[in-house]
Image 1 (cartoon, rainbow, N blue to C red):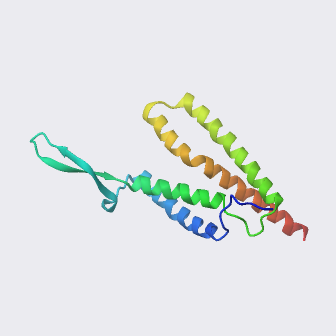
Image 2 (cartoon, helix red, strand yellow):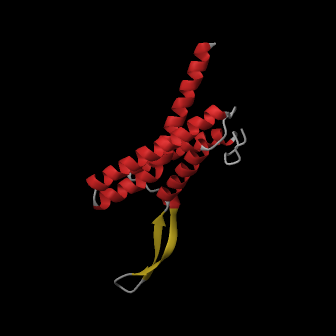
Image 3 (spheres, rainbow, N blue to C red):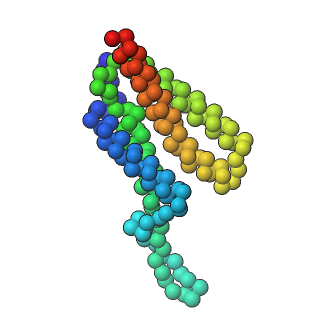
Length: 153
């Protein structure tokens, strides 16, 4: 089956490597509220109460980790398999539909249960859940398919 929209299979290993470190970094930054100095960038200047002009720095650690999570999850989700056939395509499509349903179902629940800053946090995590749900279901059904095939042999 011709699939022009998928990334090469080689990128799957790179994606897993990036995902591992991105997930560990995201967990560490979130749990310990760690912002390394190396990720501080100058975004402008501000004037103090004394009239002094001082540089303003922003920490971009969250942005780096977030972008690497999205890229790694996209590469993992949409890289070709070693043997890409119709059944894999069917699993991929069903996983995507299932992930969209679950993701937006949870988002509807979040609209009712969360407000203000809590809702903003939910929306930030929601950026990743669609790809995460897709990858979990897709990998599970591939594992299940391979297990059934090895059982038949």
